[in-house]
Every structure is written in structure tokens, then in C-alpha cells.
Length: 111
Length: 113
Image 1: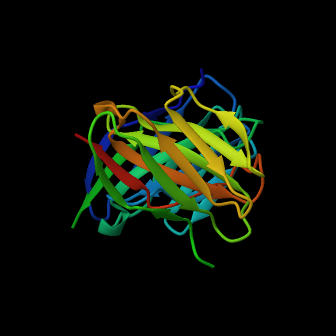
Image 2 (image 1 turned 120 degrees about the vertical axis):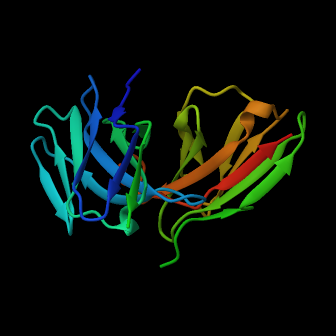
């Protein structure tokens, strides 16, 4: 069974601070996705990383895929209240559509 | 382009009943996957359909079933509902089978009393 561990589970910070969320596994994934989910809604895809060592930037968000494709991180610079939400990482195997999700990190950015 | 739509958005049922949830994928997407999200277990994969065929199945009992129609719309059915089936049921669509990038709908929140 492939497992994805996310840490921390909960993060509360002040507006303007930086934060990092980690997603770790003992399994290798062909790709890894990061989603943000707001209450009452479905997860919204932020990014897909495919290549080991890959770094992708989306405005203030920086995503990194580990060299061995077993772990990933999401770093938010100068967080804003609009960044509040549940951040989920999900790994895909070569079989494709069966995503394995991490437990999520709930981020609260206080104004 | 319209996103993934799910109906109904909210549903209340009692134990022993059965329920059918519907999902319309993004236009042109042919693969639909279903997930169950609960506070305790997080997001768990139920099954995936492509071209009206189930390609993958998660570790859920046989009470959970699904199907896909020729227009790629999908339904999932849960029979003999249990209290533990209360959850947010999410549908995700992707262009092709094996496509790792999935787009989620808003979900159907099911409450079993």
C-alpha cells in the first residue's frame, strides 16, 4: 500500500510570513499533484510535478519534487489570507488515474 | 469551458437506503474517477471509468458501484447505506485513461442518519 504523509497537519501563521508543507512517501510516484481545497468545495489543482528534482513556481508558491520522486514540498512566500485552505498532495503511479492522497495540511493565514 | 458538475450537492438518507450520485465531466474528458473524503480517512479512491468500463477499483465493499455512459457522464451507487458512508463524494475528470492530471467537481455531501 502506498502512503503519503503530509506535515504538518495544521499551520497557523500571520499574513506576510512564509510556510512550507511537506509530502513524504517511501514509494516512488510517476508524478505528484498539489491541490487546495476550500470548505464545501472540491480540490482545485495547483500544479503537477513529474521530473525528479523539478521545481515549479506559481506566483508566491514554489513546488519541488524530490530527486527520487518520493517526496515533495510546497513553499508559500509572504502568505496572504487568501492562501487559507486545505493543501493536499496526491501521488500517481504508472497506472495513472488512481491518485493516492496525503492526509492534508490545513493552513490558516491570519490578517 | 464548464467544469465538472455533480448532483445533487447535498443529500440526507437513512441507514439501509440506497443512493445514486451523478457526475458530468469536463466536455471532452473521457475518464471519470470517484473519491470518498472523510475527516478520519481523508480522500480515498473508489473507482475509475473510461469508455464505459471500470479500469481501477479501490478497497471499498461491493455496496459501492458505479457506471459510465456513452457521453462520459458517470453515476455511483451506494446500497444499504451505513452511518460510516457519510462523507463528501468527489468526482474527478481527466482527458484520457491513465491521465494523472484530474479536475475535481464540488462534491456531493451525503449524510446518513
